[in-house]
Length: 236
Image 1 (cartoon, rainbow, N blue to C red):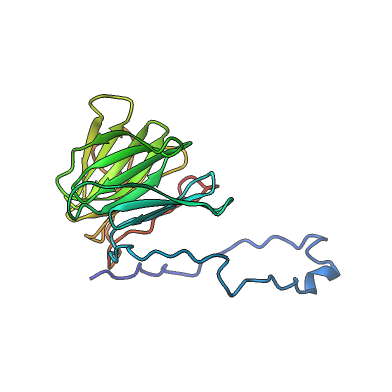
Image 2: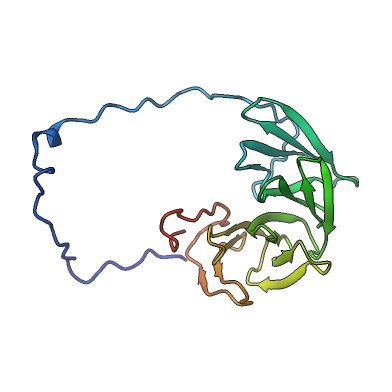
């Protein structure tokens, strides 16, 4: 069982700074104006064939304001600026649903499939650039570490690193999970990779290292939602 951390043995002393003139001013007692939070959605998109599977990562928003959505064996793009929607492609093979997708820089979109493929697409040209393999089961998570480098997590419990410039794209294999890797996120600086799995395990990896620098086993369910703090580099 996972028990909460023990409480400190004694009280914690927190130094208190003297009030500044600004803090002690009459304005301190005034309440801030309430912030208006909309109660209705700004836009509703139909997604009739989206797969009901918790472990998959089926939508991602690009820096250029384009939303990519996986619907069954197809990938659709919605431009939030223009409102335009179009179908990018459809996978080949019976039951070969799209299981993950992740935007890179520019128009690059990485896509993982049920048949353990990773496809790299140029969205601007609506053209596939290459197909990569290496996993033994579906690819449930993807994350870019640099414009030419991304990582993939699979139901085979492995994490693979890929250099998209090289013919032999697979440059490293990480073994640190016992079940499906359903969460994967490189830090904005590309210095740390966080991985979460259906084994309730969270691992932190460093580049060019094949063993996790840190493993956290205190979660009670699958670890999927991962996000790095943009202004404090070591907070996840």
